[in-house]
Image 1 (cartoon, rainbow, N blue to C red):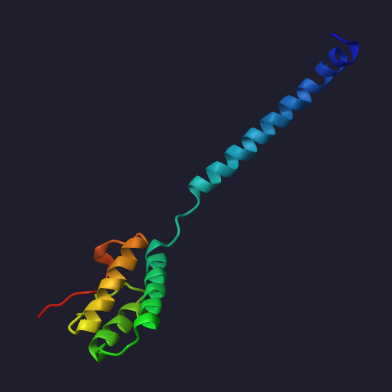
Image 2 (image 1 turned 90 degrees about the horizontal axis):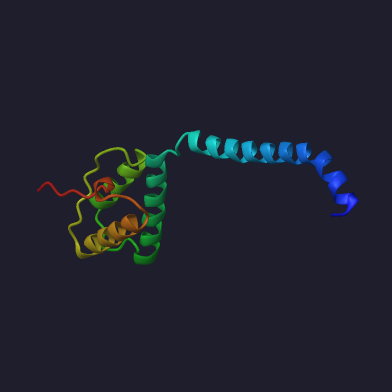
Length: 122
């Protein structure tokens, strides 16, 4: 043992303990704050993801073959922040193709099938 380390070590121990305690509580406090922060608005997030998927799919596929009722149903669903029970029924080949793409994109984005606006009553 050399004299330099043995004399300095006791003087620095309280300082190191204090620094370690502050670091521990700082990290713990940050973790606790992250755990207690309010959850993001999941319904709005889902709607934003769906809007993005819808826009991408429309840009790729185009609107040819999509009927007014199909497009109006989607517009109403999106305008309600995806909260209304829209009646979007895919009848044409193009509408069914778009609906299938949107279902896959929605599922890949973490949404459930019950979120989607597709419903054919008749």
